[in-house]
Image 1: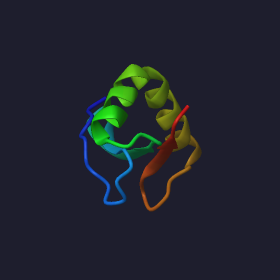
Image 2 (image 1 turned 90 degrees about the horizontal axis):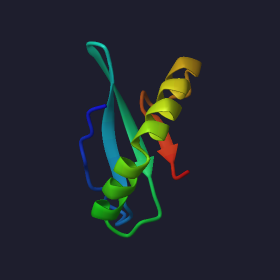
Image 3 (image 1 turned 90 degrees about the vertical axis):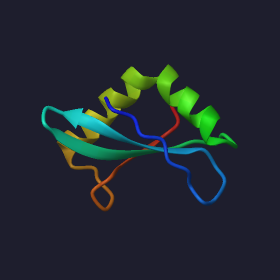
Image 4 (image 1 turned 120 degrees about the vertical axis):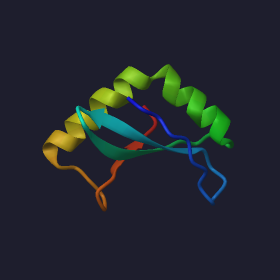
Length: 74
C-alpha cells in the first residue's frame, strides 16, 4: 500500500492514501478524531493491515463515495 499524507482544511487528522491493486491505484481517505495529521498518520501506520483489508473489501462491494473509499477509525 502506498500512503500519501494530505491535510484537511477542518483541522482534524485526515489522511488520504492510495491502495495499490497491481498496476492500478485506488484513492482512500481515513478520517480520524486526532487533532493533527501527524497523529492520524501514525494511527494509519499502526493499523495499516486492517485498513488495507477493509479498503479492499469496500472496493470489491462497490462502497465508494465519488470514486473514493472512505474509512473511519476502528
